[in-house]
Image 1 (tube, rainbow, N blue to C red):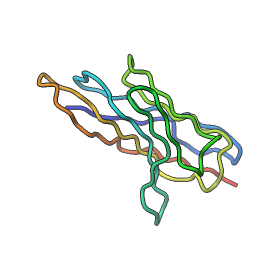
Image 2 (image 1 turned 45 degrees about the vertical axis):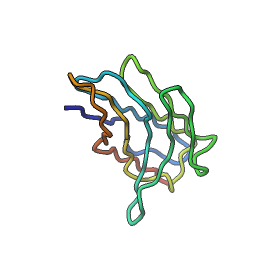
Image 3 (image 1 turned 90 degrees about the horizontal axis):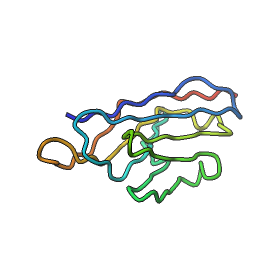
Length: 121
């Protein structure tokens, strides 16, 4: 069984920074596309940033120039560096990944449990 575990969330003042991490555990063979999503209270989940297996990245307009997504394939980990945080960035952040795992090397889409980011004004 493959799991994604996020960490790094917390409370930060506006203008501050946080770095989120998401690690895949289990019998992982390879990681495909990975992404960070967020869901604020009363709002739909939205894509924040994505990174392909080849390293291509894409960002929501609202975070361009402030957030950076990266990955370490050797560690089965994706990161989200968040700078110049704003109160409107407050949300639960989830990572998502396409994972090839197990003895049969099957493809799974896996979600983490989420980590809360709170930005105070």
